[in-house]
Amino acid sequence: MLRKYSNSRRISDNIKLGSLTAFTSGMVNIASLLIFFSFSSNITGHYAILAAEIVKGNTYQIVVVLGWILMFFMGSFVSNQMVINFNKKSTYLAHSLPILLEIICLLVVGYYGQFFYRETLFETEFLLMIMLFAMGLQNGLTASISNFTVKTTHLTGLTTDLAILASMFTKKEFRDNSELVNKSKLLLSIVVSYIVGALASGYTYQLLEFKVFYVVCLFLLVVLAYDFYKIKVGQILISRRSKSKKITYDYDQLLAKSEDIKIEESVF
Amino acid sequence: MKKTSFFIFICGLLSFGLTAFLKTGKNPEKTILGAWKEMDWEYEKTDKFLANSTIGKTISDLEKTEIAKDLVIHEAETWTFEPSGNLKLKNGKTSKSVKWVLKGRGHILQLKHAKGDTENYQLTHLDDHRMVLNIELDNQARGIAKLVFSK
Image 1: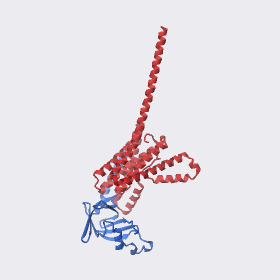
Image 2 (image 1 turned 90 degrees about the horizontal axis):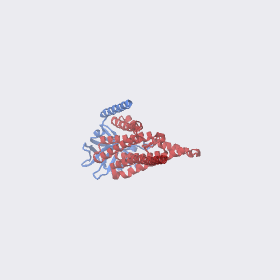
Image 3 (image 1 turned 60 degrees about the vertical axis):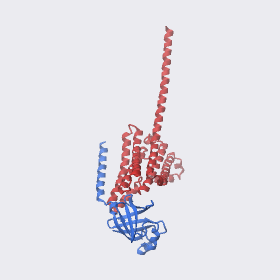
Image 4 (image 1 turned 45 degrees about the vertical axis):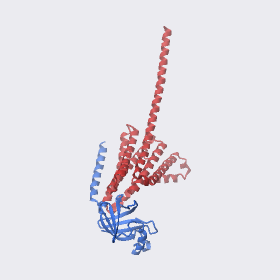
């Protein structure tokens, strides 16, 4: 999911990454809506609210909403900075750092909410800022490493793309196009995962409250651990192969040497 | 790297500017404090043919009782928001106290009963003299009720 970059990614990589991250963003968005009465993964609504608050002349609300939008922007910016700066050193490191940072942000929200939250407006607004930053990180990462194919925190563009594909699939020539079929599979997997995540969050919120964020972190850890495991397994396989090759090479060299000795003995 | 630093500097400056700008705005959590007198109950939207009439918009006492029968605000005339997070609802000699918090960007007023039940109202307008709350109605009444208060 995280080891490959841009065009070297297969459709299965994108589906795995898209499904898991869409599931987490669905969970986060509904949790924030239920707890804070505001969305944290989609920004379009915030732009609309910003315009409405400007019209009403509510300075305080204008600043708060601008701050939220800025935090989402910063999340995506930081995420892509990590990808482009660390990619040459290690692709896995470059792609896992934003997820790690996202986990930290969500842990902070969960922990603070569970033990310290007194429900003041400032706390609500600040925790929402952290969540928007986390969602920006995630969206920036998935979009960046998948060549802008996977976006998992909002579904406006995705629903449009799905509608376009559905319309195209009314013609046989497009139905036979494997690239378009794969694209539709990816988009559908993201939509379904987002809804399942949102439902899971909605149903478990009454029971878990702020602990919902720990569950989200667990899913993000799965994303990190899956690729870490793949890399480790790959390294072990490579080292075993090179070792077996070395043993064969050493045996061949010994055999050659013993034959040389035999020849020398027969000469004498 | 220089460009990145410059960008971060700009963002920092913007955040500072926003914080300074925030100080000039009125924090709804402070504006709401004090005693508010209930002035009016009306429907947010009315039937087209009654658009120019006040009859269509005004909620009668009977309708009000029906709408608010399950709400904590039932028959309250004066709402006093205290900094401690208590809201005192007074009607003549009777008085009731609940907890209040603001959510979202200060646009949701949440009232909490002692039993743990909550009620949410949309705070659509708030200034030093006027407050408007909206309640979504689940009954057959027309959509959204508007509660107007003055200080």
